[in-house]
Image (cartoon, rainbow, N blue to C red; front, side, top):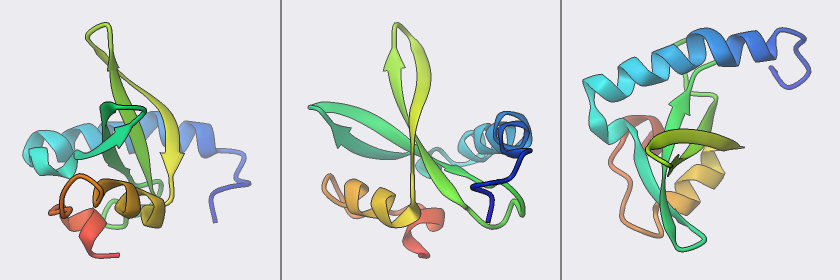
Length: 96
């Protein structure tokens, strides 16, 4: 739905990331761990439209003390990656 939208960068960099930060501050379990190349990353929920509906997951890594996101995953991909460490307990990932 959003893939070809001309306003996708604005959606993602604006409200989507801010809402993800608030969600994680309210419940740290919203950031779900995954293992990538032998290092822990966190999958964070990104809502591009309706804040109650998660559209994708952003994989973030800590680089020099700053969390940086470089990869977006579908919810199915995020669930498969997260369950390799432990059973995901976050509501946005388990409910799919």
